[in-house]
Length: 568
Image 1 (tube, one colour):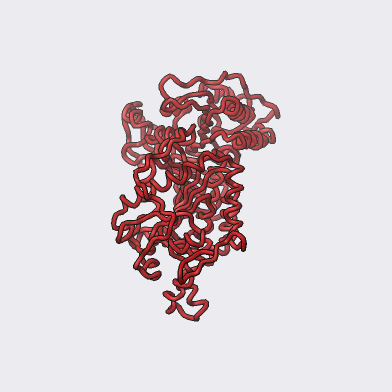
Image 2 (cartoon, rainbow, N blue to C red; image 1 turned 45 degrees about the horizontal axis):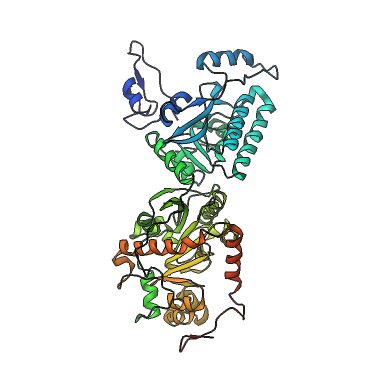
C-alpha cells in the first residue's frame, strides 16, 4: 500500500496528497471525511486519539494512567541506540510508547479499549505495549466489560529481543482468560498489522474486523519477496484478501465502524428474554398434513429455486443481523451463512445453507452445497454461541455437502462430524428448520437440535432420490419410486419422530408468498424457542441426547404401518 505523499514545495500545507489515487484533498475536508480520501476511499492512517474520538461517545474516554515507561533492557544499538529512538518517538507522538488505552462508551455501551500508534516505532510491540494490552484485558475481566483492540503495527519490537517475543504469549493468555470468562473481545485491524501483533492478540477476538485496504499478515510483503523470491499477486494480504480467505469477519469502512461496533456490543450484551409476539395459532402443526401431491412433486417443490433463501428468512424474521465470515483457516464459503441476530429482545446466532434464485447466485453459493470451510465456519459460530449463552437457530436447505476433490482433500467428513458432535453438546437452545432440501449429512450438520421443524413442502433424507435410485437400481430413472420408499416428506418424518412439527406453507408453496411464509416461520420459532430458554445447559444437553438415543431403540422408536399410517 502506498503511504500519503509529501506536500509539494510552495503548496499550502492545508492540502494532503492521497497515497492511493494521488489526488490532493483539502485538510478540513479530509477531517470531515474521517481522514478518508473522498475521491478513492483510501483510508489515511490516524493516531489513537483521533481514532478514539471517531468511535467514542463525546467525553466518555478516560485514559489509563501512563505509568509504564519503556526501558533499554538489552543495551540494544543499531544505527542509533535504543534510548535515542525512544526519545525521538516520544517527542514526535507525545506519549510514552505505542499504545493508548482506557475506558469509553459507544452509544452508551461501556467498554475497554487499547489502540496502537503506528507513528511510534511502527506500532511495534515491546514490553510496554504488551503490558498495556494485558492491563486492558485485566480491566475488562474485572469489570465484565467488552474489550476493543485496534491494531496498527509492524510486529514485535526487535530492540527488546526475546522479551518482546514473550508479549505474544502474555497478551494471548489474557485473551484466553476473557474467552473463558465469556467477555467479548473485538479486533479492529488497520493498516498495517503484521508479525507478532497479528500472530497474537490482533487475530484472537470473538469478532475480527478490518479497515478497507489495510495490509494484514504475518510476514510483510518485502520479507516474503526476499525469502521465497516470488512476485506477490495483486491484493495479497489486503483486508479484502483476508475476508475472502476466511481470516476475518468483515471489512468495515471508517464511516460505518462506530455503528457496526454499537450493533455488536448490543448483540453481545445482555438479552431481554422476550421473543416476538406470535399471531399464528397454527404456526407449528404437530400432526401429519393431508396432501394430494406425490412425493416426487413435493421434492420438486422443495427444490424450486424461487423458494425463500436463508438470507431472505433472516431479513424477514430477525430485527437485526450482523453477518460473520470465515473459518479462520482457508476461506469464507458462501454456501453457508451465519452471524449474530436479534429475535425480539433475545440475541441469537443464526446459521443456514444459502442458495439463490438465478444462475449467478447459485454458482456463487455453489448451489447450497458447502465445502469444509462452510461447516468449519458453522462450527466456529456454534462455539461462539455456546461461549456467550446465545440460542442457535439453523435453516437447512441443501442437496448435501459438496462432493468435490478439494472438499475431500480439506476434510469434508471431519468438518461435518465436528458440527454434529458440537451441536450435541451445546449448552444453549438449538432449533433447526428444514426450509427446502434436507440432504444427508450435509443437512444434519445443522440439524442436531432440541427441536426440528420442517416446512410443509420440504424434505429430509439420508440421500437424494436420484442417488438412492442410482445405487439400488443402477439408474436415476426410478427416482420417484426411491422418493416414495425413503419416506422423506414432512408428514412421514413427523410420524417417524425425526421432526417435531410442520410449518404450513401457502397452498402453492413458500415461494408464492415468501413474506407470509417467513412470518409463519417467525411465529413457529418463537413458540418453539420460548420453553427452551427456561432450561439449564445440563437439561438441554440431556434432553437432546435422549432425543437422538431413541432412534433405533426398539422400546422408543415407533413402527408405522404405512398402509394405514397407524403407529405401534
